[in-house]
Image 1: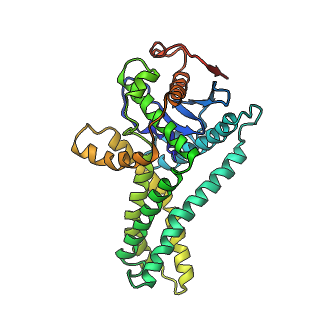
Image 2: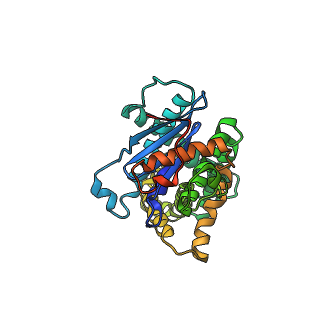
Image 3: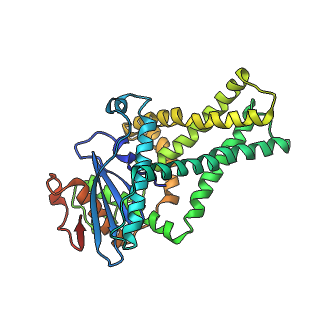
Length: 333
């Protein structure tokens, strides 16, 4: 979920500070700064291990500057790097020092599995439930708006319900605490003073540029486009065999993920440069509300990990190095 991840570093306002983004992982935090990221993990011994790695990009560099084309590859590369970091954090947090980092093939297979499960849960299952509403006489066919209203409602319920359900798991609650620690530490950095556990503690666990907002916008935009484009498609393509018709529509919805993510990326960039005001607050409100589920108040030990990750992401030679206290109980690899 979090999936959300380092989109922070790509969607925020241009400012004099370097823009860092993060992701909570198992017993730790990833902090990205430009072309590299730092991964800080609390080890079973209590020490903090910090690793710095290159951020792996997807596609040609020129594509990343093309509006309405860059959103999907950026989303995929963010998920791919996040999965690698999550896998590495699981090894380090369990004390498996010699475990090899995930290969490209393993990362690709894991990403494909994760995307497949997301499609099953948030595309195929809501479509099937909307069909149930049609069978019960509470909805019309796919060429009507009410079918897609039900489909969208089930999408939101399953999305929020999924987050609420996994938050009951102790390990995921700790990940959500690290998510809160990430936000608090970034707030402390953006405030301009020292970045310490004490200064981070006073910040909000919610952040307006959290990648969670991206996921929510993807879901919302998908619902609108499905309601408009599916009926149009059925005007051009309407096989008599019902299973084929529904399978084709589900495939069409899956393919729409590419333009939906591209459009959402541009929408988030637009929201990021808005001056603070009513319209800006309206755009931010749903994401901040969702963060009430995806973040928890961290303890000082978790904030210490977040500070270590940000310190390493910026680097010892950055002009902001003097805003951090000397590292203690931290091993950099």
